[in-house]
Length: 153
Image 1 (cartoon, rainbow, N blue to C red):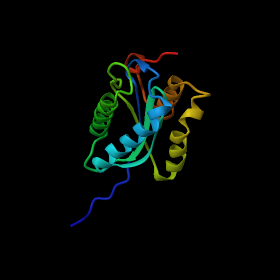
Image 2 (cartoon, one colour):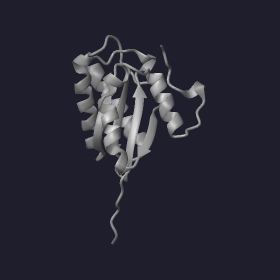
Image 3 (cartoon, rainbow, N blue to C red):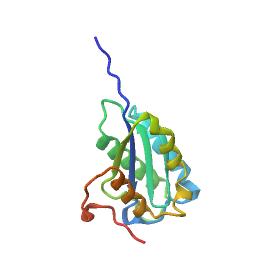
């Protein structure tokens, strides 16, 4: 009987609802560790989790029995519940609907990991909107402005 062999490296990006800058340095690393653990729970291998005050990037090996949408639905649901349970924000925390997901080859892994782990420095020079639109353009993804994240400058 043949085995299944895969290597699907997925970089996903999702944003805080209302693009509130509420993911503070005080608990940001804890959130990223929690998300990495959530990926492991579903047999997906976390390569990097990072982000900034209003969005998160995750880079992981997708398990062959998982779909990107179910992994992200789980990560977003569990992490928002985790944030709300700990009272890190006033009111109710929510992620925006939707996400961006992009696939990379193994040879690109180290560059993607560096990129994700340097988000704070990166966003000193570039807005999240510019970053996200650049990803969509790089991957030649047709999009409609109506269905993008809510961006606030």
